[in-house]
Image (cartoon, rainbow, N blue to C red; front, side, top):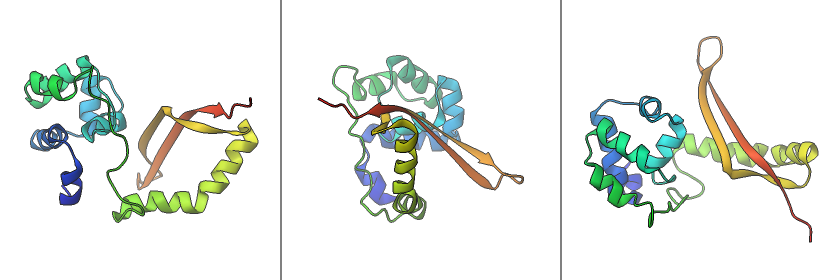
Length: 156
């Protein structure tokens, strides 16, 4: 794991990632066991999403992490993710930089097309899902789908 990223992660995030590696599990494997999407599971591991108690019980069993550690660190009453902040802009990681580059090149075109189809508003990142798939004849293509609720700007 990148040392700079590791220094920004919580203790429990580091433990979850280490357990995942030692068990040789993918986020898809874990997602299947939890009945959750692999990207959402990864977001939990990186402290970017809030798991439910049932998720934590399953993670405890699957990763051999004591349930009380998970329940304490992800306490339903006090834990709320601090989303974002894991990297600087522009990102130095080549893959993350390509997402940044996609927004630099296609951000306004996407915004314009969304506005033409839906009106003046935004796509929610709260009421949102995403999927990553292999695509193409030889499975050498990356297909990422973003699906978010359209939220029109309010007029008052």
